[in-house]
Amino acid sequence: MSPTVEKWNGLLEKAEKWTQSRSHSQSQTEWPSMSKVPEMQRRNQDSEKHNEPNVISFGPYHHDKPHLRAAENIKPICVRKFLADRNQDIEDLYKKIESNIKAVRVCYDTLAMTKYNDEKIAWMTLLDGCFILQFVHSSAREEDMSNLLRNHEISLVALDLFVLENQIPFGILRLIFEGAQFKDGSTMKAMINRFVADRNGILPAGYGRGLPLLPEESSHLLHLMYISFESNFFCGSLKLPQITIDEFTHTRCLNILAYEMCSEGPDDYAVTSYISFLGSLIDDAGDAKELRSRHILCNFLGSDEEVARIFHEIANNLVDPTIYQQIEVLIRKHCYNRLNNYMNYALYYCCSAPGSLIAFVAALWMLYLSMMQTYFALPTHKSK
Image 1 (tube, rainbow, N blue to C red):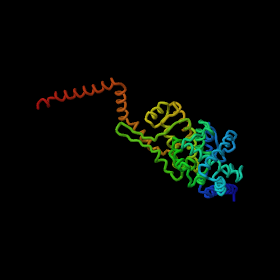
Image 2: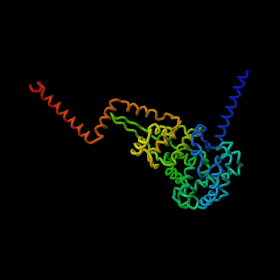
Image 3: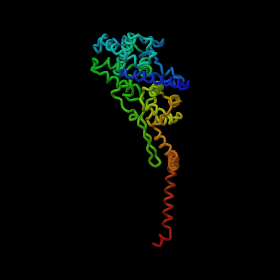
Image 4: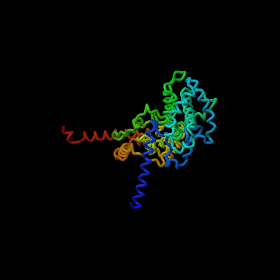
């Protein structure tokens, strides 16, 4: 065997082992992998700012980082309230998680899990899961959490729940709240749905696999981000789903885009396509203002310039999956039609000022009278 062929066989064998081990890991549990931000996005400017939690960590990827350690003291207090509200025993919950510890390990990157033994992982997962559920319940019920978190910290914790590398398997949450209700009669599933609907501003409940990712209610996201364009003579009608823009939109979008880039993410690239499409529409503050006036953008930033800047940064180096390519073709075809341009120019010129419109109508009326006068002045008409 030649050295070239031997080298090739070695490379192929290594690749096959990696693929088999990856498939084997996925088959070990029904719970999906907790993805990490793809390297391509991690190299972007301000990646750390948007891809790392601000206040609190969930799971092993950012656990015990210096700026997140203070929040670890809050978790046991929230867990105690969670257990009391549900009449749940901490030992029973720990045993549930301990019996699924291998499944938990498989969900995360192997290198990240080597730092922790099974007991550490079990306690980490238990505290994180109970805290998340208690925080979601308190937020959805608008309960006072000022004894533990200040108002700005509450908003940052809610944002941290949407960070891609700050997730725990939904299967763990299900183990904790399975079949349980709070003293007020509310179910955990209803609380999660309400929390997601109130917080994300971009996605409906049911997208993906982590906390704001409810498998039971998942649907094809393209149906929820439906875009259409109709051309009726010289008028065009573009229909877009509404999106809320606030100070957390940048971080939420980048983490959802990172999730769609991962091999474990959804394969429809719905958010990537929609953000890319919006980026193609928004060149400057004027475009953002137009979309806001049409109630497509709900701007809570207060500045159209800032909205335009955010979309430029998000869409920068974004690969468009071309899901909405046909819509773009229809828009270009409509815009490049000469007759449409002439008619739109005439309408714009006439309607730009009341005097212009009156002059245009008067001119049409005079033209009509001249035509009628000419018609009745024809010899053939006089002979009749």
